Image (cartoon, rainbow, N blue to C red; front, side):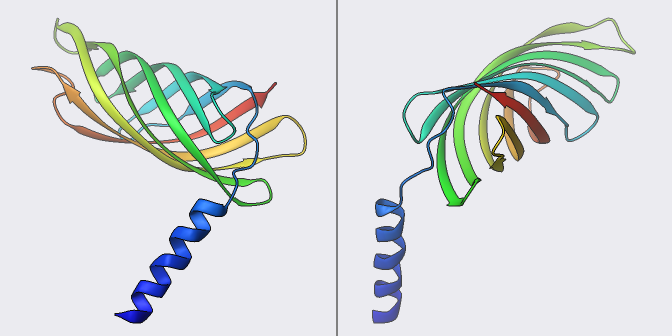
Length: 158
């Protein structure tokens, strides 16, 4: 028990003392991937503080005979691992619209989203990221479930 207590103090102290690498004020690019089809998003990140940012994504999904368009907003916390490597986690949500390919049905949906991932900031103004975004949809038809969206991001920093 004593070893566990000492270990927790060291870990919490390391998290508290560690400083996040300064993140770029702005980043614009693409986020590509989906859990059950193909998806692409135009992604914009805006730094709020040295270790937090806002991410806005406007995307299209094509999966299982359903087309969907969605707007996502996430608040992310960023922690430096080593050098240009960071990991991040966040939460947010969004709104979207869907259209079934095989039946004449369409509508809108709301969703809550989390986000966890890793990124690498190159010496040039480029960042690559890999993240998982669990999304919980709220509607009667298309998105009333949990979706684990995994994607690769490439963004230009300015």
